[in-house]
Length: 508
Image 1 (spheres, rainbow, N blue to C red):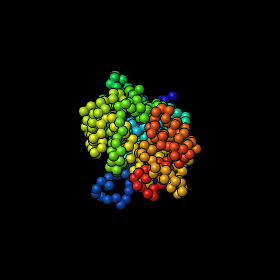
Image 2: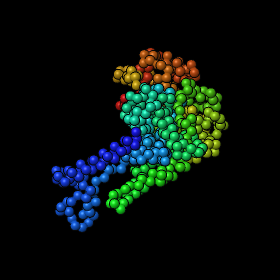
Image 3: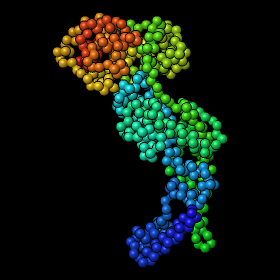
């Protein structure tokens, strides 16, 4: 059957050539058509010198594409001689995206770090909003670039109708993706994209080099480990360089396609020495209830001490840039991760712990301001919380909303002028407003995870957190004058307290 089809194509090509020649002989075509269909068109008024005077400069030929190359291999029944080449070419649309695997993994690791000890269900925001509100300015370009790459690959998988797309994800457009889609949770966009890239690399390597047994973890992947090429450019360059045009004695032209040479050169240049990637090691984010930092701190509370009020105030005044605060929080988070495994001597200087125990010399300078530099391990919780507070209060000073992830607008109700005067008077009577600011901030940041309703009283809300020792008992005791306040005003109260503490006026 196949030989009959080839014979048909040969006869069709000869018939097409005769038809073109007849048209040319009848002069029934304009100049442009004659240029396209003539082997050596006779054109008047051409220059007599220079490259453009050569008739062959105007010769028409079929453009070489990867699909045309695949057709040539199949027509000449060469697939059985170059099965690897045929497999590579048939997967060229997927292969070009494998080179982005390091960036895809980097984005997931960044987000997993950001969401450690945080229930992600509270962040019902788009990835663009998250980038705008939560990513420091000096990291934003790289973050957004990796996001764009993930969107590009997702668009590709949808376009080719990738067969393992979960049904509930098929309708997700790349421009409507939320932050949760980029976290590598089960059946997330990030998980599907990563699995696809890793499987594609492994499948190609197994075809190219069945004896390859070197495997690496996804966490160790570097750009040099992945298949890196742009098939439409790289493959075609090699293919075209191995096509020989031969002019026979009878004047007919014959083309030799050196497919075996093309296969060998492609394999040697782009696929050899690339390892398999262990699919079981790709990132997977699983939030475990009860793993908040407060819960961890409660297990070592006998080894912790708060900062003095003076130190607390110094941090609130000294740190004036969001990227500086983000870098400090990131460093503390690394330290806390190691403390969960083995808590060090509480009286050891925190900078010494970073430098000597964790070998993080490049991180020590981030904590160079007076209070962090002189703080000890036992101050880790207090440092973490006051820096988190400073981050939120700085956003308020910049007229931004630190609680944007709370999408229920009932929690964003403002005080009237009369109500503001009333609660300013109450707050002015607090002996330790720092405790209220700290604990109320923690409650608001975790409000979604306790199913708190806007009509709950503030005392009732704090008691919901107190059952796991997440709240400072001093904060609960000082709430008596605010007993009748509903949580719909919780954010307004916190902002008012911060404004009074910092002497800020006019922000909402």
